[in-house]
Image (cartoon, rainbow, N blue to C red):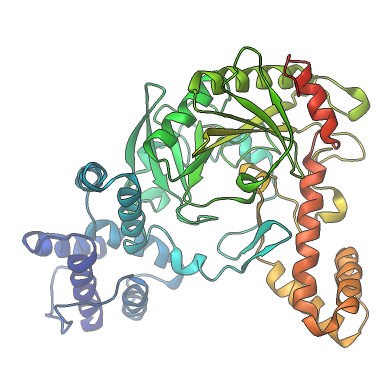
Length: 489
């Protein structure tokens, strides 16, 4: 047991240096850890009083090894117990929020969110060391990542349920009641409060974020995802509070929305995504709002950006676009807003704040299906499912693709086949399109290697998936749609 006590002593020392654990509370916290494991004795450890580690990974690894050897828990339970122990060592919610607010007042929003993010890394809620191992590269104007930290998610029906537990507590996986809830290994979850549109919301970082400082703003009230005029108001309230972040809302429908549709929330963070950089293919104006411009983006998806320093203009124009789109029908293009299976059209708005003012990008989405495309006419088409079958939500619609972790090994094998000139074996038959196209790229530039060819192929496929999601394949059709609202070139 001595190794267990040593590792706990090291964790306490780490918490003093990184998690604001006061010396006065050290014995109390240590006894709280002993209580988790039913330990009623203590053998003085030999750990250093000063721990230089800035992340807990190595110390936690030693703690897990010692506890497994002592029979306190098995390896498969390590995540739960690490969460429980780190939850004992860290600040309680009000203490953390008081420090956050103090930094916000003194040094500004960017410094406050940086401190909060760093704290979430140090307490092991944000799994940064795992995220840093995810392959990530830029190709053909997109950011492509391979997500090794989480399993592939293929069932859109789960999104409607929002990971809820019928009659349970908390009601879903993002309810505020999860803060400190051991039942979902959320002892290390901490949040800070927000006021958006006069409502109480809160902000938390994602433990397995897809980009830098990826987090979610969540309604305190457990209410379904929706987009209406008040959504634009709340999104702009958020970037007024945190002008260095973007924030957006998934389309509130299965197959084109996020993984939690049962609880109203937005996603954002500290990274400029590719769509934010897209230029305008066409620019229109509004007679009633001369302070605004309406841009049809030069982007693979169908996106209409409204730009103005006047919040009222943003709200009015964006709401007009939303209202027209959700009622728009064009059977020749396969666009049906509603039928016996329910509502099929929605928008996904996302905003950044720049020198031009608020830039509200409204992504037009449809989840309609037919016999040929049972997963969605405006979803990744079947030939691309081996690469990406999961929903194309807010983040990917903005040009950051999250591909399943299995691809790291599978694509590496195909690259070896390409370089050796060997044919594709039967077990890799679903990759025929990828193999053929990457082989052709490699054949034109063999010195660059098969890995470079594969990256170019992934960039091409992800761009084509975005084109699949476009409801208007021709930008001129988007212009005509806007002209129907009275906007002019």
